[in-house]
Length: 486
Image 1 (spheres, helix red, strand yellow):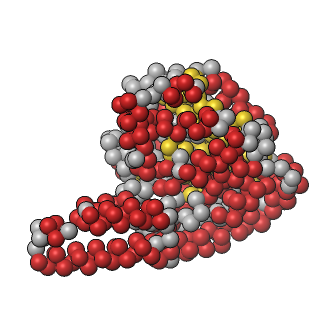
Image 2: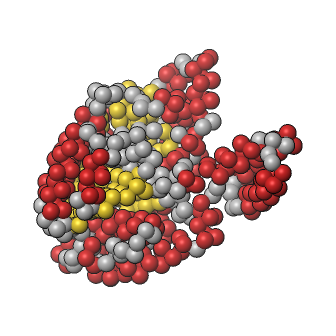
Image 3: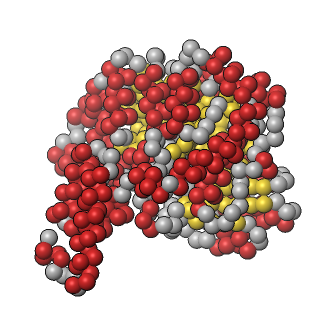
């Protein structure tokens, strides 16, 4: 260490030593897995300068930081206070949920979400599933064009291309009509895309914000996709704003994705997440939790609407509710678990529960892209196939184009569609959401899409796995070492 310290000026040497010691003490005091703590201690001791740099940007436990600063508890208190009227007027839907699903797998899933999130079961007046970008964006443009009060848009990626050239004029028209337009995009996710159209919208009166611009949180992105229109229409799922989500762009022959549209009381769950992120940014005192931005009361939906609940998480959340909802669902399954994700670099907790389900004789299927956008992610994924297949699970590689869908169907009864990938960035680091739908008919739609996708897949066999040897095996195992940042 002294070699590195001697490179610094005297005053900076003292500052660095103090910071280095404090960092090590705080690291030891953090409530982490011992293996992770030891790994960071090894880096900090033997590579002090580089180690401190990497720890600042990639190693800090933001769950601990959030608790120390107290802002996370403040946000939760605001959410509970502001959403109390929504929950009260929809209490009948919660009661109906326990009547209809009290002895089924849906109950433990919902209890896990409600215990970890500021969330409740809410009724959706309608649900519409999209398995391609052309249909989804055509429907979205129709809804945007008739917005009367406000439009809230949040995407991980907002490109500047043929699709945005069609959406931006619609938003400009709505702005002229007096409609409020707010746009959030992830700063890092959009760093490579031009911003001329977004600046044009801002100049016309839209409020446009780059999200997660704090360099200390550069490793923790906002991966959610949320649209709320007039408090009555909502969208979420895997698709960002870009032409490639419709036709595959220049890199892929096709793009397979899943998104959904919902209406009614359940839209409050999406608006809550949007309003919460607006609140977290603290750039003004605008309150988006108010009744103005929430669905109007609808007693009919309480009695007959489709029951849904949103599991959401971020790196600050103590329980990672979206991830744990998956774990509860897989662990409680009695017949089948079908999961779709473009990537497969899971943490060991969710990996083990998938293996447990397969070993117990359940029909466990996992589908991911066979044509990657990031080869290193596919290389790492290949190291996880063997145990799952040997346990009795089945793995499918989609080969018709890029596969970007994020879904789960359990026992053919309940399902979820959202933004969370089965990789460690989504499972532990990013802001994510999964919208769980407690409806057999909707679950069947998601399952039917899975079966249809299988026609474009290669099923990975144990022979396929064992044929990977020599350099390719070493390459894949080396890629797995970077699983926390893939």
